[in-house]
Length: 130
Image (tube, one colour):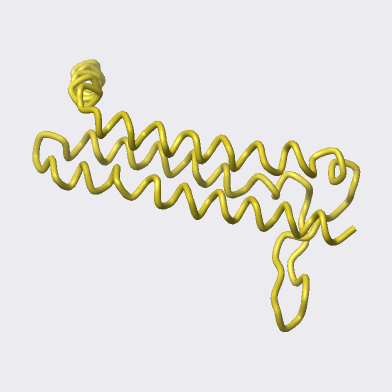
């Protein structure tokens, strides 16, 4: 187990020498932090005392999903889990197929944009539903 952990950190240090890897990871982290800050700064004080908050809006039925206040941060949690899984897979494939590793890392900022958009839409829904 110690060899595997040491190999993981060795490959991670090799990856950190690439400017593209650092750029892609930093962009994703920035987007996930923004996806946390948007609902936290805008609606956290409004929803913390509510039993249920709106989480999804459908154009046919209006608000069709309610949940506890902490579910507003679900996109951020999904982003953190995705970050961990993508880093693990990119480290695993770094020595075998570097292009696959870069592809996994390149998908992360795109996913980060969608996570940020979902956080913005959930925030706007909660602001307009009062």
